[in-house]
Image (cartoon, rainbow, N blue to C red; front, side, top):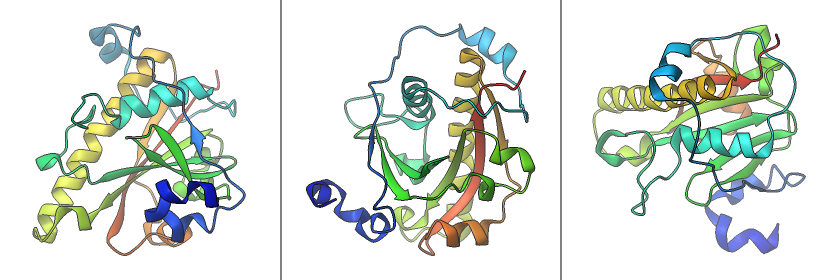
Length: 210
């Protein structure tokens, strides 16, 4: 872990809990191809039946870039955010552990060496999905705006990201569903989130079971 300190200093308190995990350097996203937008919109749907088959690294890379990756030299992203606050973080729950998506470096930074997939929702199928995305709003990034404004911004911005995931999955033949049924207090404790970091929604992604 010491060789990573210059890059990961802001995450040290969390990474100490993930000593058995290493950062996942995602391959560069493939930004060409895919189904035409109108076809993806036609095929967009929610699915709650998932194969346990893991997503290949390239598919996971493309998924996260489509969700909220950097698509311009100035650091702006594939989904809009109010005042470009970029207050939403994507935590990625995999079988081997929990990671935080670093959009600028396009990699997954380790958080916990624990399978938290089942904890990301109250429905049984979430434990089967190979990938569960947890959308977390960092209220500290929104300054001293009123609490209600922070809530509205973060929920709207999460919706944009979730729809990007839906369209990517429709294009790639993946199953997905966005979820609000979460024990947020329990999950936040398991994820070791600070009080100003609020869980908004979660989204399961994987290959369809049939």
